[in-house]
Length: 308
Image (cartoon, rainbow, N blue to C red; front, side):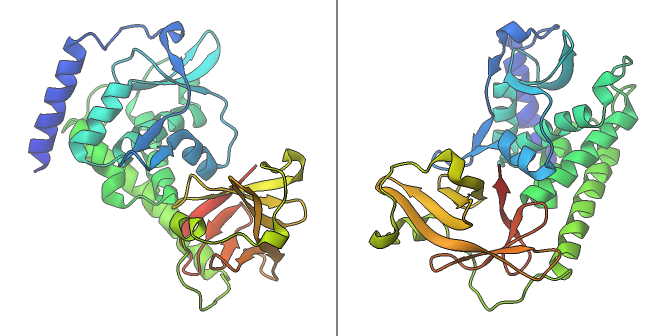
C-alpha cells in the first residue's frame, strides 16, 4: 500500500513540475501573502498557520506565503524570513495520503528550521538540521491532536530510503518524528496527571450544540459586536472553529451571534497551580485552562486554546 501511494504521489508531483510549477530562485514578488487553510471537507476549513502558532506559543517572526517553489522551503530573502509553499504540492500530498495532516507536517517542519536557527547557517541543508526539524514537526502535530501515523504520513511517502548528502533516509526521519511526538505525548499525560480537577461531566458539546441553544434575552448585549477593549482572550475550540467565543475583562464567557452578544458562562479561578482557571457554562461542559492557555476536557485532552 505504501509503495502504491508513493507511486501515485510521485506521478502527481512529476506532472506538476513538468507544468512549470518549479523555479530555481523563489521570488517573494511572485508570492501570495496569507494564511494556509486545509479542509477535509469544504465546510471545515482549518487555518493551519494559526493553529501551529497557538501550539508553539511564540510570535512568528516570519511570513508564510504561497509561492512558485517546487514544494516548501524556509528561507531568508533580503534579510527577511519566509516560509514559502507550493499550494498544488501540499494539496497533492494531502490527496495522495488522504489526510490534511501531511501538509501540516510539512509546514511545521519548515517552521522548525526557522525556530531552531537553521536558516541562519550558510551551508544549506544538512542531515542533523533536517532531523531536528522533523522532531519539531512531530512535537507540534501531537500537540495539535494528530495521531503518530498521521504525523508520519508525508515522510513515509516522500523520503528516500537512504541518506543523501543533505537529507536523512526514511527510517531516521520517521524515528525523529516519533521522538517529537512521544515528547509531546509525555507532556500532555504529565499535565493531565498533575492535578486536573476530576468532575463527572460529558464531553464538550460542539458547534451544533451552541447553535441550537437559545440566548438568554435578559443577558444579551444590544451591540452586534463586542467592544475589543472588553475582550481579554478569545476561546478557540478545535471542534467549532467558526464560533466567536471570548473571555471578557469581567471574566464572562460570551458568544458573538447574528443577534448580538450572548453570555454563556464564566471563567472561574481554581486552587490548582497547573489549571488556574476553569470555564464554567450551562451550555458547555467544564473546560480546564492550563497556565499556558491550553483548553483541556476532564480527560486531559486538548480541545482548544485561549488566544490574545
